[in-house]
Length: 233
Length: 247
Image (cartoon, one colour):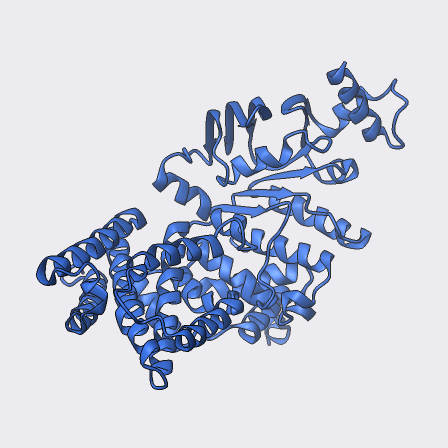
């Protein structure tokens, strides 16, 4: 018998231990994060997307409070001009919440390879999408909330989704943001021209379907960009 | 050269935090010493591509951080521990390190093992699943070190890494720095001269935004031979150079 057969090979216990702990501590991404990682072509952005709500619990609470107060005071008379500016105010709020002033890990995040503007854009989509879902749920109880949800939150979710889709496709957050702003301006002006009312883009129920179509188109663009390349092997 | 700085300047209003620094660094552990307000943190933030310089040239890992594409490549190979580590209180230790590993664009399949290795290196295994809000200051510092080293960086920037660590942890951390310095460039900003003496192969001393000394720890010690201020030889060298610079 060969002596070597009787003696075990040297075992690198550190390496074994790291493998064990890696398996024990491994976090299994949920379906949403896996889908987002494919759509956004970045596990980092997907992680940013799914962790956004948990970073700012007060934001979720404040959303619920705003819906409640909005419903109580019923400000749905006349033309809701403020809604046209509200997206910009919200965007500034999101940028501030995840910027150097408030986000505790901003400096660290800023030094990362994933572009900080892409992370911010992903957070904006998440904020609008979660708010829209909350709004849809609350719409069952209140007509005022329904008008806010369908006239503002869903259009904004669509615009932000379009922005993110263009940013992912073009690999440029600036290009995406420019496209999003242009798309919103065109939407507002086109509806004004058609109806004569400046706020038609957010009050005309006929626009809701195009908003959903825009969101679907944005998803299609992303899917087209990330399609498997054929004939390359 | 992994770091090449030429006449690097950063101003905040009228204050010149970093004033015409020219510096090169290769593989090894490089200590950055200086009193509070000397410009160490501003210099480190520019190296971390977080703060753009007002004037001068920076090349990191052979790339120009002004170029978007090259900056991204630098950041993939960078580890950075800021002076004030911000954290998300609801994240666990593993979640926090994993999050930044993903933002560094590490391949997703490599992340779990890399996170486990980083957690073990800073001896936080028993706290791996603990939420950050439950950890002590020293433990949070170790979490910060773990996220900085998770991608096995070619350029590691540590701003006051041993602040809050107990003596035993500091000894272990110096060994870790020496190990990392064999494969990449480690820049350690500190005002604790004993860290420099124990771990660094080279040291620079900053005062009023300028580098007033560069050499080995032994050369720094030699400068303090006839100087009486300080309890340890390195401290005497440190104070001798600072006194000369201020004079």
